[in-house]
Image 1 (cartoon, rainbow, N blue to C red):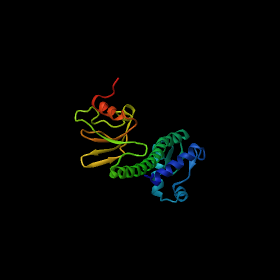
Image 2: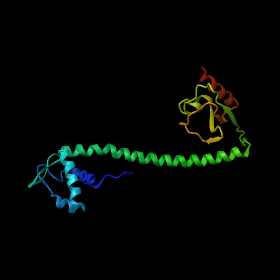
Image 3: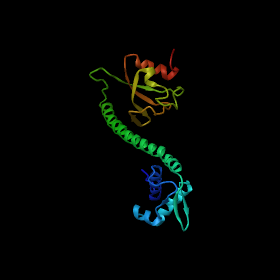
Image 4: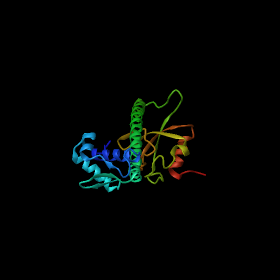
Length: 207
């Protein structure tokens, strides 16, 4: 994850102290040399930090006199700009973790499905059969995703793999897009699921 540069981190920290009243409005802020020592950075880094605060009208710089705290309200406003960004970064980080977990599970599922398909016998002890259905070239689902067409909701059949030319795509997710002549490997919920799939791919949802 990208980290803010030191001068921005320092500017945010100074603004936070101003917003909390540690540095009072109208009072002189510590000089650049003192701030440089406090944060353990160069005077050039402090100069960049103060320039940001001055541009936001949080402090004012009077050359030869010092740096003055101008506005507690502007400090709070400045910090609020980063709250939504920080929250978004956190959410993105959590989303990436969930995606990694999903990918791990999908990979495991894919391996198991591939093994089952290689065995050639698609009947389990529960009499669940894997059947193959080809998407017609004029099917209305072409260029739409599994999620878009609510495939399972209308057919009560689960797509466990898709044959596309020489490729076998196992465990396709809801974002997978259909193309003509895709061969769907499905698991039926009941003995009518196969016919529902055929009808749905050809005519859509029947009233």
